[in-house]
Length: 605
Image (cartoon, rainbow, N blue to C red; front, side, top):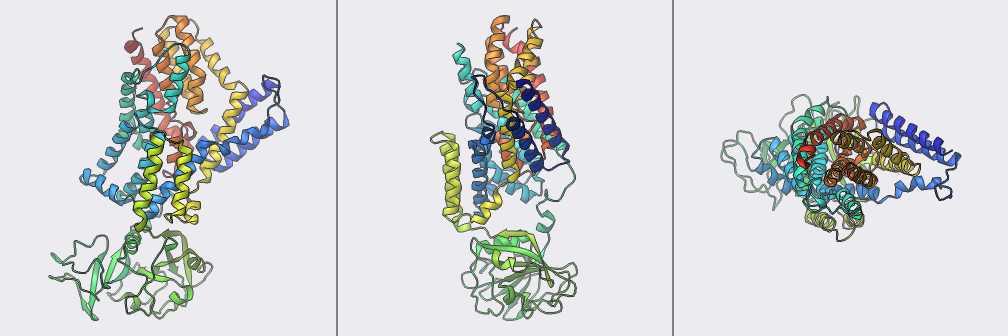
């Protein structure tokens, strides 16, 4: 009966990996199918453990309550809090200045910093720090996210394999080695680790992005096309407005970022560009053009206001954490077509404000309220999600609900940054467990108003949730049936009596494959005693085989379930399972070959 469970588990894992790799089915569907299969296997055919007790099939579901899963989800919510408050605007600008305007320099700076930092800190908080920063840089530079985030995860793993404290895998492996009489110090394997990290880093930084290059697909661009489109809007310079006193130079206003003035209405007298020594005054009405992102930033800074249709006194609706900007299209035959924005009745009907209009044909320079709407116009509308939802199903205006974005709560940026810093520092110095810090951080983001419950809910990634939960079930099945141990011992027995370099090389390859299916900690714990026994029997340096275990167990590049940081970047990078195979498998092979060639010389055998 035990053999049935063993080989059925192998079959389920093989089919699952094949289904993930083909990308013909959704990750959620494959995850649920594999979970159902393994649950049915151990539920329908009871399995007896070596101690004679029957295995409870319900334990296969413990992965859904695993601390790693809770940590990943909570950290995603914490990161969303940084986005929602624009807390990363300052760091991004600083890094961009360091790059001196060159597109790749800021990204390279971050990746190099993470590689060095991860040698001394836990990889997970290092990745958490830079995911949101890279997301902002990616959006600003129009570089596809999938070319950035996988290198971030991989470079931290490479950096983490250079010192004893670089990852939990290294420490677990060293602890087991110590029980067998081999003490591994802080920098005992740093020399070879640095060589592997440099070789792998060259591939990650300069070759891997080319493998990830692919045609843009919906869902990978995050409405990039819309983000670059220009809307015509209006800015009224009320008392205290930050634009007041800004003076035109060379016909332009260089101090006004992102929004471009196309017309100034001063006491209803139009002033057209080029502007000659014009200084903006209180009461001026600016007709501007800008992207949706520019209007989001302007509203967050108080530079653009949600004015009511009859507002002439500068009173405005104060956007809060629940306030969103969304796009909506005037439908053919709409009753709003042919009417001005002010007299259309659109704003009072839905309790929303119109911030801008986008039209393919040229529009006359005029106040926003006086623009006459046409079928096909795209409006940039502001309101709460409840008011925006009231537009659903309306035949006169077509709501593009996927474009809805909340207004950044800039006044809470420092608070969000403090919460984030607390999570990272407590985790990095292991003052409290990272799962505790992450969940507490997520709760504080919501409790302090940096995030709404709705924003936190949207940050939840069901793909990651189901993928981790089902993967833990398969890994547990492998361990309790002895499937993992069988593979390890079979590989060693098959190579008995062979050259030492070949034995160590193939042992490394076996572990590198296993670490992408099981957890890297499990592989390190399973293979360290075997590797040290091989070294003792063959009279080889035990340090060489111990290093092989540490480096191979860290080669978790070929699957998203191989390491926690891979799961962290899977959502932001919009990766598929096959992306990790395509980009990560060559890295595994490169590290395997590099170690196999250099290790015999480095360790002297």
